[in-house]
Amino acid sequence: METSRPTVIVFDVNETLSDMTPLTERFVAVGAPPGLAATWFAGLLRDGFALTATGRSARFVDLAADNLRDALRADLPEAAIDAAQAHVLDGFAQLDLHPDVRPGIVELRRAGFRLVTLTNGSVAITDSLLTRAGLRDSFDLVLSVEDAGIWKPARQAYAYAAQMCDVDARDILMVAVHPWDIHGAAEAGLRTAWINRDARRYPRAFAAPDQVAVGLDQLAALLAGAA
Image (tube, rainbow, N blue to C red):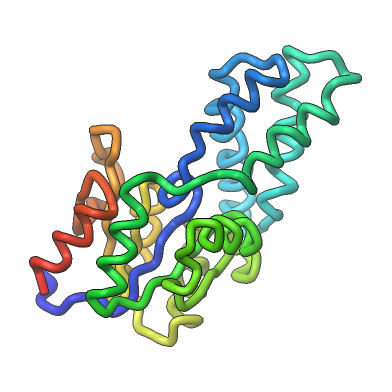
């Protein structure tokens, strides 16, 4: 069991920090079924992971746009696709944080941790999210896999974060809601914390997280108790 605490906490962004449920409303607003939001995002991740498995990469926004266009075609006429696509994708720049994020970030920063983000999306979207929430100054670095050259959960993506933070992998705690992200980080030698807001069962095939919390506020309390 680890006896020393990590010095750096790296956060996934999409769904871990940002609440993406408002995107569902944007699908409904353009005339698509609400369930299409989850289907589209899963397809986007699928294609990103397929590229990752073959050693290639693409920008999140490009895959998001391509997958969204295909997803919308089943319910919208071709003439409406461009406007609908723009309306949904513009929603990323309007997302807010989950309620547990702000108090968790404040406490983790107060406890002396260096805070960093590592997203499969863009630096610009993360910067906007944190700036609008008044938390940008709490983070030392805002990182994207676009600069790593490959998506998470590839080992190289986490190695890039360690390199940019100038620390050993075991000095990093990776925080995510996605089990695939937790698994990838663990395989790369990072410590991990799974945020399980929805009382889900963790997949047994994946490397188990070192910490489990229902929100970032609870994670902050757990780490403070272990200090």
